[in-house]
Image (cartoon, rainbow over all chains, first blue to last red; front, top):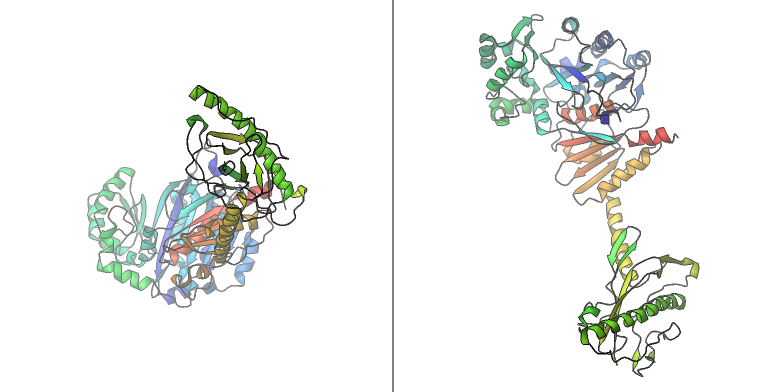
Amino acid sequence: MRHLKFWKKKKQFDIIKLYKVVDINQAKTFQCKEVFRACTEFFKDCTDEYPNHYSLNYSNKSWKTLQGFEKKLRKHDNIDLVWLYASYSPEWDSFYENHFSIGNAMMNSREPPYTSYIDIIITIEKGKLSSNKLYQFLESLTGGFKFDYGYVVSLREGFSANNERKDKVGLFGLESTVEEIDLRWSNNVCGVKEGYIRNIYNLNFLNASHLEQAIIKELMIDDVGTTSKLDGNITIWELTDEELKRAKSKLDASPYVIANNKNPNLFLSTEDAKRFKQAMTID
Amino acid sequence: MAVWDRWMISSPWRIGAFRFHSSTLWADTALRPSRGRGTSTSALYSTDFDIGSLAKDVFFSGLTSGAVAGIESASNGWNFWHNKPLLLPSIEITAEGIPAIGQEFALPGTGEVTQVPVGILKKGGSAWADVSKFQNEVSYSMMVGQHAFVNHPVTQMVVDLTTTVIPIGGALKIVGRATGKTFLKASSKILGTAQMTGTRGHAFLSKAVAHRYALDPRVSRVTMDLGYRKLLGSAAPKALRYGPRPDVGVLFKSGKFKVFEIASKSDKLANLASKNEKFIRDWGFRGVGSQKVISGARYINKLWPK
């Protein structure tokens, strides 16, 4: 019942989210095991601990050691790995802990959609993640996993790392919802290759199409945030809280924000939205 | 004539979790001793049932002693309001003086002859041991002659819970049938069986949650330890290779759904939440859903390990 100990200071987490848009061939050749190893080392680097809980493909079965889990992974090909989850928490009753997950949703379907995405979500307690470590990790990743879009969001304990909203916490449980806005994002992720973004955050990893997009270009010209190159494809766009507010006010009126809370119809009314959804969903 | 035909028992009876009004036997509600001369608007009852002598005796003795006290109290009221004594003979009603139902009897002192139209149902030959005592506040009313009304609580009543007792009986039957039907209907919504784990309370909580939602009229289907395809039917994408099997899944008629994970001792709470969220989001089910992780079984198991 750690979540109910209101006198305890709430932890803050940095959540790194990376997305890669893939077709069936890219999904099949995704080196999931290698990426998993890289994530595990990064996790250890940040938290000084290897995960003590591993889970695979949504099953109820779990492993407590890296050795045991790797033994299990060796029995699987990369195409059989659709979701990997690893976490470390010394507390037995915590809903919020350092963890990471890797998802390759396309490989979960025998009748896959035309386009899908691979996502990596890493949640690390604030203070344990430094920019240097992060960039080193991202550079090491781009060798085998060239992601198309990503961002880092800071959330307090009590917020879901997945949907970035506050969970409903009760005496013996926690409830979180998947709402239309979440589905809107997952059904249109492929838009990130055409200049669309989920939303604007303090730290954004943008691809070339984003830099060509009029509003982001304009913001960058106005010196909103600082940019630096991660590699040939990805540009890091870092914004202070003040700059974030300014950027948000502009982007809220833009159809290029997929998870736009204020004006969801701006994106949904575009022809692109229909095209993306058609490409990413199956009937 | 009509001396005993205007009784009323109207009291909320409380048995177990059910609470209902036993107005089926008598429906006369116009009996107010404070109104003195008030008239009875109706005197309804039905007695097409049998009565066990033991229960009858206890029932009547309670009623009688209450009646005597009530009549005395009503007489005092009468005297007060009308400033003249109530013209009533002395009333001596004892348990022995109460005849069987339908039998004619003369009210002592008045000579009026009437029939006893009350009774309680007692099915089968249950023994005294089967009879449970309840400290119910049973208020009943009685009219004597054309003038006096009493309304007096009987503090102890004996009812037979193993059989059906009127006025409880009729209502119990109705409630029982209705509840039985409701439970039967609710159970038919549930697919699958609760997952058994090494955590005490896991299966119990799964069943409790499943039945709680099965009773909800807004719910069309409840699954236990089954996948999303079984829960959502055609709304779920076909041909998925892997997927979570939530402990309880609830599909509402509106198309929304809710899944519950009852955390067992080896589960990581964050993992349970994550995998369902991720799965629902990835596969864009037509109805938006929510997921809930319940950690209650872990605490039960912590206090009382299996």
